[in-house]
Every structure is written in C-alpha cells, then in structure tokens.
Image 1 (cartoon, rainbow, N blue to C red):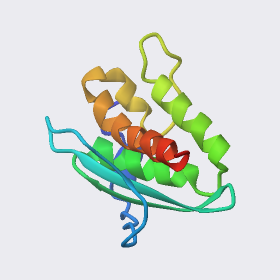
Image 2 (tube, helix red, strand yellow; image 1 turned 60 degrees about the horizontal axis):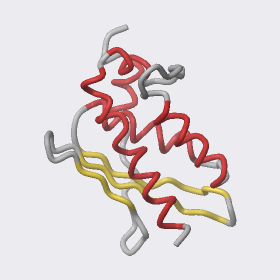
Image 3 (cartoon, rainbow, N blue to C red; image 1 turned 30 degrees about the vertical axis):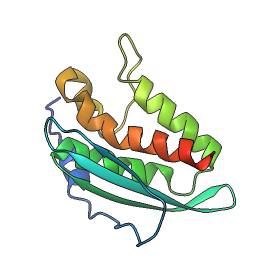
Image 4 (cartoon, rainbow, N blue to C red; image 1 turned 90 degrees about the vertical axis):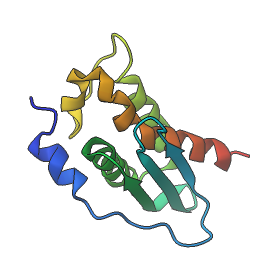
Length: 131
C-alpha cells in the first residue's frame, strides 16, 4: 500500500474545525519539520459533543488529526482514553497494527511522528482535564 493512499489523501483534505477563542486546547509542534496541530474537545457530561482542531503540515499529520476528530466525536472520555492508547501503541515496536485510514504509515517508521502528533496532543489534553 502506498504511503499516500486515497483514504489518507481524502482525509488530509478535510476542512479543519477551528477552535473557538478562549477554549481549552492542547498544541503540539514537531520543530524538526514544522508540523503543528491543536485540538480541543467540547464535552457534555462525559461525552464528546464536538472536536475542534487545526493542523498545519504534511498530509499524514492533517489526515491523522482529521481521523482523530472523526473517531472521537460522540465517544465518552473513558472510551477516548482507550482509543488514544491503542492508536499510539499500534505504532510501537512489535505492535499489532490497526486497520484505519492511516494504516499505510505503518510501513514507514520515519513518518510515525507525523501520525502520532495529534494523538500526543490528545493525551496532553486529557491529562490537563484531570487537573
């Protein structure tokens, strides 16, 4: 499977859902390549009502951020913690890969950071919620 599969490219073209001013957010930056993303979750009770996001950088980063947003909407915070852990773990050494629109990235370890950046921002966001 090619790195830039049709699914990945289609997802990378998803229009971001900008974060409203004053909303709690989490940002990540890869200073080596300039990729950056921000995410914010709007919750009602324990359920994510809306995922706001901005991603600037390569197609893999943009696709991964859009995938994160589509995957999390409507899920509970507990479900999201598991989804986040499983996604990140799937890029680990010897890990079982998951089937998703970014599956082609598994073949290119040098691009893992691009796919993981928004998921690391999510981890930080969830950690900050607990404070």
